[in-house]
Image (spheres, rainbow, N blue to C red):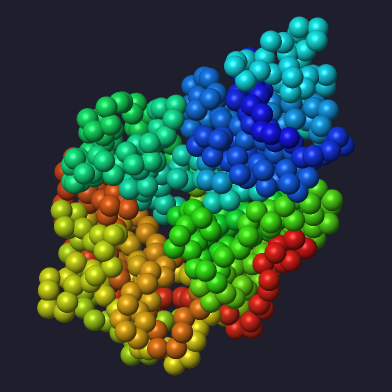
Length: 567
C-alpha cells in the first residue's frame, strides 16, 4: 500500500503526525518505529524498504517538530511518554502481530532508547478497535475509543521488543561535553542553530552566520552566543543557555545495564559519539551487537565513506531485526569493527558479563565504568615519548597555550621547528610492517600547567610515506589543580579501527586547546561557558613519564559483518 499519514494520540491528547507504510498481504506483521525531530518525510524510502521485507514501517515527527503539534524540548521526558504511547498504539492495530522494533539514528536513537529503557507510568491506548481510518490526514483523531473515553495501558505494552540505535546522541550532557569535561562548541552551535527552538530545520544556519561574522565563535561569553546567532538567523534561541546547565552524564548507559531486550549499536570510529556507542553496547544487559565502521555521523550516507568498507545497512538491519524477534541471537555481547578502509572487519567481544547497575545513583565517573564487562585489546603497544623507537620529541616540551591564538581543530598543519611552540610535537619512525589497530587507545602523560585549570588535548595523525596527513585519534580532558603541580593524566583517544600500512609515521600533538571544535579554556578557573576573560597558560610535558598506548591486533580474526552481527 501507499504511505499514509495518521495522528497517534499521547496521554495529554496531543496527536503526533506519523507516516505508516504496510507490506502487501493481510496477515499481522511486526512493526518498525522511527521517531525523529528531523522530518518524517525524509524516511519515506526507508519505510518502503522495511515494508518490502514484510514489516509495517512507521516514521513519526516528535512533539513540536514538523507535522506534530506541541512544544519540543530536546531530551526531556515527553520523548519517553510519547514513544511508549506510540508503541502501545502500534500493538493495538489489526495489522500488528504485537512485535515492535524501535529504530533511530542520532537524536532518533535517543528516542528509541528512552522508549525501550523506561516505560512511562501510563501509555495512551487508542484501543484495539482503532485503525488507520480513525485517524485523518488533516488533523487530530475524531475519537480515541469507540466509547469516547481515553484509556491507558500499563506494564510493558509501551516497550519495544528490540532496539537499533545508530550514532546515538544519548543526552544533553553527552552531546554538549566530552567525557573529560571540555565543551563541544562547533557541533552544538551548528545543531542548535539548525534545529533548536523551531518547528523545522535549517541545516545551513551556522554557515550563514559565520559568513556574516567569521569570528562568531570567538566572541565571549559562549553562553551569549545565541544572541549573536539571532542577528543572523532572525530568531531567538532561548534554550541555548540551558544546554550547558545539564551535567548529568550516563543515565541511559546506566539504565541499559538493566535491559533484557536485544540491542544493535551502530557507530563510526570518526563519529564524535563513537565512545557513547561503545559504552552503550558494552553496558547493555541483554544480547547486544556492535557494528563500528570507518564512518562519521552520517555513516554510509557520507560520500567520503571508504568504498571498500561500505555495508548495506538496510539489509543488515532487516536481517538483525528478524533474528532478534525470533530469539535467535546468542545471549552475548560481540560485534565487528572495521580496520579503516582496508575492507577487513575484526571481531570483538567482551571478556566478562556486565553487572546490573543501580540507575538511581549513577555519577559521571561511573556511568561508563559501572559495567563489569571490559573490551581489552589483545595486545597493547606502548610508544614512549622521547624515545627514538617510540615518539621522538621534535619540539615543545615547554609551550605556551594561548586562548587568543589556540591550536585549531580544523587545521592539521603543525608549526615548523624554530617557531614559537604552541604545542608539544612528537613523531615516530616509519612502521616496518603493517599494523592493525582495534580497540581503545589512550595517552598517559606527565604534565604541568601554571594555571589552576587546564585542558589537555592529544591529537594523533597518521602520515603516509608522502607526508599526507590523516586524522587517527583525538582526546581532550580538563584538569584542575594547584598551579605548577606535576600530574599524571590519562587522555582517552577513543576506539580505533585502522590498518596502518608499512612506512606510516605517527605524529602526536599535545596542546591546550582544540578550537573551534571545543570551547577555549580561559585558564582563569572560570567556567568556559560564562568566562569573559582569557589568559595564557605555560605548559610542560615530561617525556620520561609519558607514553602512547595503542590497541594492537595480535591474532587476526577477520569476519563478515552481517553474519557476525546477526548470530
